[in-house]
Length: 394
Figure (cartoon, rainbow, N blue to C red):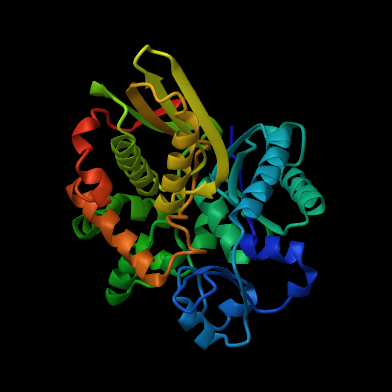
């Protein structure tokens, strides 16, 4: 049976939500992000992209490039609500789907041609999403995730593209190599310096040479240049979570120490999220009293992997939960409702300096371990944490 994979991507998602909420923002250059000059761009409209504005750019530079742009603060709660709305519509229709990020989906519709015309089915679903959500969304259909994603990106906004089986290499061949997922700025610059600018040039290179230059990624580069991608659509599971908990060597009532332990736990879990490029939409705090009574409290939150958001929420939940002032023997934190995404920190509130600080901290943690850096309040209590973050399905 031939594979049929649909890729759907909401067009300029944050901007589209803001325009839906305020029609006066339609067709004007729009930037969503930190409101002060030291903030960063979280999202931008297609009108501003013509001036060179892009996400994660310092706000002062974005304003210089497009001085007429309207700048508004983001509302992650609204974006999360709209993301869930789209997810529910896709879940009702698609046999198997994967939520790749807050605004991106893969649908495996292999075999549906026996009952429907697959591309027509995808177009009708797209039309339904646009009508019921009021948001624009693009789609690409091909035999694998790679080609479908490239097709969506290449023809959006407002794209409906079908790359017929057998034409995948012809479609990718003329494109710039940086259009291929996994080829970042560093790799693209290296290939450009070698004179490799198009995908068809890359695929003509010997695999051994690519492996010599890029290690284990060399073969993957060659496969992608040849439109080869066997990765499956992983069925979406809203309940996937990561968690950590610790039993103290001696029961305690020291709230200051308990706060410090919670902070250390959350820092470690947040780093795990960003490292695996995931976001969470629910946080749970667990406590166990000295008499073994166990209580939990959870809160749904906008999708995030931000230390600031998760830390303040976890401490607030703990303070509400720990009401009996009895000795505690265990505390734990769980992050659930995970989706893939690169929203690493709170772009709407953090400054450019904060963004760079957290990126530098994550780089150090990746190299030397997640416990090497942390807030001062938590460093002295690392010895109380005897569990590593665990990924689970509940």
